[in-house]
Amino acid sequence: MIIVLKPKTTKAQINHIVKKIAGFKLRAQVSKGKERTIIAVIGDERVLSTVPVEAFPGVEKVMTVLKPYKLASKDFRKETSVINLGLGVKIGGNNIAMIAGPCSVESREQLLATAKAVKAAGANVLRGGAFKPRTSPYAFQGMAEEGLKILAEAREMYKMPVVTEVLDTRHVELVNKYADCFQIGARNMQNFELLKEVGKMNKPVLLKRGLMSTVKEWLMSAEYILANGNMNVILCERGIRTFETETRNTLDLSAIPLVKTLSHLPVVSDPSHGTGKKPLIYPMALASVAAGADGVLIEVHPKPETALSDGDQSLLPVEYKKLVDDARKVAKAIGRTL
Ligand code: PEP
Ligand code: MN
Image (cartoon, rainbow, N blue to C red; front, top):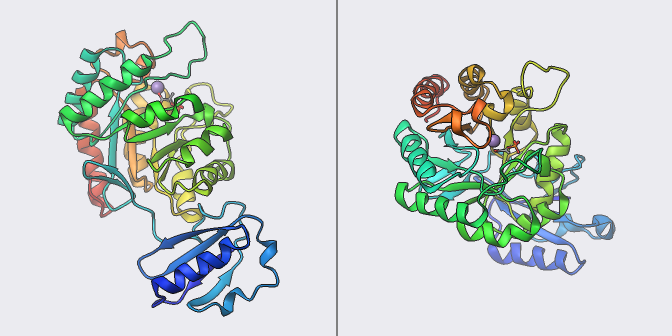
């Protein structure tokens, strides 16, 4: 249930409604929009069936959200949510975020060199995995806490917020200590216990779309994070598995504008994992901006041939610079900044 408040509802009236709802053992999530404040009621709202909620002071109307995702839905908030990553970076506004870095943190030297290069090329968020979800147990699994420390050092040096994957509920506190944004990887999109744990934090979460997930399932996963109290969710389209084998995944570009009709959450695109093919990354990055993405995530490595993961799809800094320069032109053409 969504309670839409009258334009001039007072703080005291809002608190009164929240208290009333809590009295029925339901949670009230207040969202202050530009024009309206609305309250989402979370829990088994059947207990309110005989309660005249519309008569509470300050209430304009009560709406039932038919979609299975409620807090993630556009009914809950009309404008795109703006998620603050810190260090002046916000995702979801007019500006398009450029997230870049290696697939894995491999050494201090490699990460600092990449951070310096992507910053110079125009990136404003640094990425890099310290916990890696690998198909083979014999493949490089990441540098764990040592990698997180290197990421934090790069953040201080280059003043870029850091996004890094959290693979397991046991690592949420640890990753929280070093990162500015949690990444939930495609393979963990439906790890509901992990979603609940990051939902209890108040740090932004970049939620990748699962390899075989529908848009509805993806939004339901976002709902897990939101329903646990963390409203700072950024969606990331990273390609899905289809019958096509010429690419690593099929980047579902249409999901970007689609999600924008269904949800207020910002959505970024990851053409690196979305295609897995170097020559396709530049055109798909530009197409993502044209399709309305709020950010673009690209894997960059100073020596892709030596990368311990995803070297085949990693761009050189110089290639990344061209991508940023040209994506900026596309952004300008559609009235956005980058
Ligand atoms: C990554 O970002 O390096 C990664 C493993 O992504 P995904 O979960 O989309 O495969
Ligand atoms: Mn990768």
